[in-house]
Every structure is written in structure tokens, then in C-alpha cells.
Length: 76
Image (tube, rainbow, N blue to C red; front, side):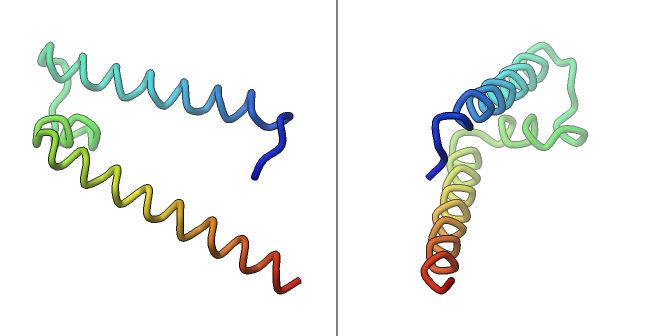
């Protein structure tokens, strides 16, 4: 786990990511972005199932990376 000194940076990164996603969604709704040119817009155009599938994939990768990191720390 990260310590508190890393939390503000992580918070800023997550806030920026949320802003980008919100912007892509708004741009797609306004017809300002083509789903062929923006992966996020493509996910939104495909609907909730595509978005949730991607979130699940990323969550699985995060869990596996955390496990691998823990295993590496135990071995050293």
C-alpha cells in the first residue's frame, strides 16, 4: 500500500482521469468526437456492457499486479 505522502498525487491523477472521461462523454454527446478517434468515446458509444467489461479487465490487472508485487516483496 502507498503511504499518505503519495495520496495527493494519486488523487490528482484520478481526478484528471475522471475529467478526461467526462470530457470525452460530453464531446461524444455533442457530436464533437468520433468514436473511431477516441477509445473512451468508442466505449461510451457501445454502452454500459462495454464500459463495465473494460473496468473489469482493468480491475483484474490491478489485482494481479498487486499480488505479483506482494509475492516479489515476500521473496526478497
